[in-house]
Length: 213
Image (cartoon, rainbow, N blue to C red; front, side, top):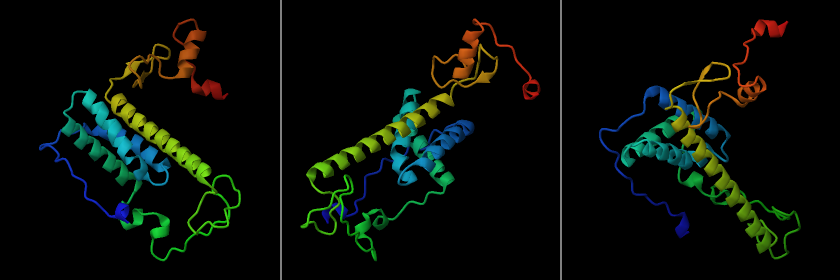
């Protein structure tokens, strides 16, 4: 029961005045994070922390003081949550399902991992047939969470970097684009391979109307 007691975490006061991201850069980062949140499981809040960490890390590397970087990252992540319509649950709603009011316990007969019958002495909340399946299931869950966390953090970090970069001209097609990496030269993989096929020469531009004929 002690683990289920709500606690109040210490908060670091945001600097005043807060340094803010340019509106176009903030909107672009917000949209990237919102896209990740729409696919996050079980809720958009699963990647709230990693997204904030990724944006804050990039801003710190850009020379922002930690306090300003954290406040700006928190602001853009909250904007993404608002965009996807996420509503933060109460403390009680965030507890395990079997602790909720008016929820009947799930009576399992088979292991949630291997499907074998549960032991005869298993009580109502038993999910696994033994410690091997329980540890393996926990390892799988930890691995998935680590992958999702790393993916969200890297995507947020990359968005914060990309939206700051000036546009470059693609040597293959001549179009302007924003690079996703510091050494990116071409606007796409297709453009890179097509340029190599033409021996490094700029690709001939063909009217789309001709291609449709």
